[in-house]
Length: 547
Ligand code: FAD
Ligand code: N01
Image (cartoon, rainbow, N blue to C red):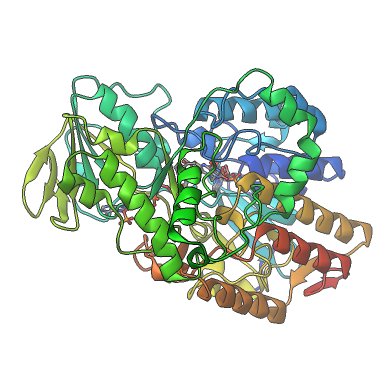
């Protein structure tokens, strides 16, 4: 199907021509804009929110903070920026990260090319003009040579698939759309559905304020202690003195977080030595979320090895939670540790020792409906003044499949991904020329410190665009063969791990009707970067360059 670009948009406004449209103004879109502008391109960024920051603009729930250490969860592209910004603690809060995003927007004068409160509804490839036609919900039409999707892996939130939400008479709040002015739960009976990372961060904070909190849990999660703390004097200066080496270690590491490689399998250590390792990962105040899982080489490939760490965490839960029945319900038992995103907690398990906190195990008494007064399970109706939905996201593909994206001959991306995402390097898709995805499915993305992956993608994509421009080319496009072999490689490495054994959002299992495919690339941040660099060094091997 060819599509001829109209000269005016439906609102009568002229079609605007730019070199590139970038969708999203989170950390990906902001850096993409900065790079492309530096290369002399005209760029228009569209962002649904009324400000920058993406994830950190939307997720304002109580207790929201990041769980990669602040000095690693920040841009490294400009030494002046990383030297001048002062972080206050190990894991910064959402407001602090949002301040940082705004600082970056100001520092590089980004806002002048970002149009806020605008949703991109469609991006359609015009086979004749060899350009993208981009339409927004404000009726604008743009013609762009390149489109970069920086629309986020965790930006399309989902509500629970049970009837009745509209009939609830009190207010309800999704963690990913929290009111800017905050919520005062003092004196209220609150119900929360979900026990993923968002819930695990917010439950202790809500419990401390509300009169009563009931947690509806379908699947318990493994959570390790955050040991969050303010930086001691001198720590930040010392880190900053070694920033270049530290950043380089992150870039070449497996998860974007520097960590010494494990030397042996878990079962090769004797039980006492193994326990000491796990104790260190659990108690060390400078620990990270990867320490436990990175202790041995086979934690994510050998169920028996994995069981040793899973049992260690279950023992800690039983130690902390006083009521044995609640403790048992909180112990994950039906999937290997690490195959659902590990959570990082501050007083999560301890919170269940409070008199005003109750756990409802939905495995025993499933949810039936949300009623006018609260929530009904198969056993009883619970009455609430307010409801919190911490029910997650249509992850990795949601932002892309909820847009109308059409490539050559009208091929819809959603259709092309009917049986799961297909991409080359997680960056490009065959039959979708001059289109790039930042941290797309089949790239390390959500299995890494995202800041490291975002920078790597943005830099690779902007280099590719520069190559196209400098060589006077019209298009760059992944070949179907390169895509097929990357899809196969992804499946092969993914299937060699324990990940496919869990019902996780990594597998798409949390969204009804979504194909069950392991979406992120598990080959490691460092090796993945090498592969991308090799492709570029071979004049974009696996791509067709036309012009
Ligand atoms: P986003 O920040 O999601 O930004 C995408 C933007 O695109 C959004 O603002 C959205 O409104 C916009 N958008 C989407 N579709 C459209 C459209 N059609 N039109 C216009 N605009 C659109 N990662 C880590 O590495 N460490 C952490 O500790 C960590 N903590 C997290 C905590 C939470 C609560 C969540 C939800 C995620 C966390 N993540 C973490 C992952 C996080 O998403 C990334 O680290 C990073 O912020 C993603 O940036 P981004 O710019 O790629 O996407
Ligand atoms: O979402 P989730 P999230 N009935 O999908 C439950 C990042 N993040 O927002 O597991 C009952 O993890 C669902 O149950 P189940 C991080 O990458 C990071 O918490 O499907 N329950 C689950 O318990 C994270 O992984 C931080 O059985 C229902 C919960 O809702 C990702 O974002 C903080 C249900 C959803 O958990 C997503 O985290 C926050 C239903 N119908 C987020 N539907 C950091 O700490 C869903 N659930 C950095």
